[in-house]
Length: 66
Image 1 (tube, rainbow, N blue to C red):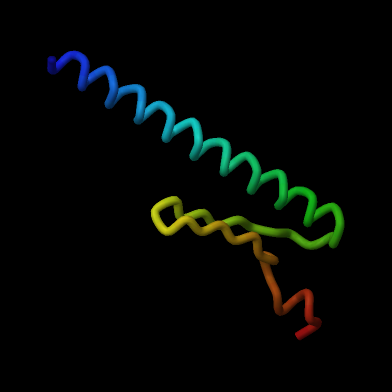
Image 2: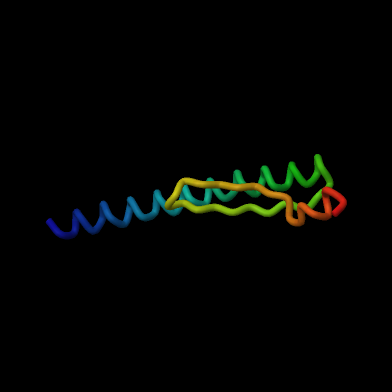
């Protein structure tokens, strides 16, 4: 019975890792599009535990002319 649970746990971990990489790929794609569109450098921050993705301007003060 333990081997079955081990197999299920391995599959779940693999699926979670795959989904995390998919989220990261989408975030990087959005970052790249924002950079092309606006001409600024953008950074992404991802917190998988909180379910949070942020795409932000690297240096907002430069963008505003401060």
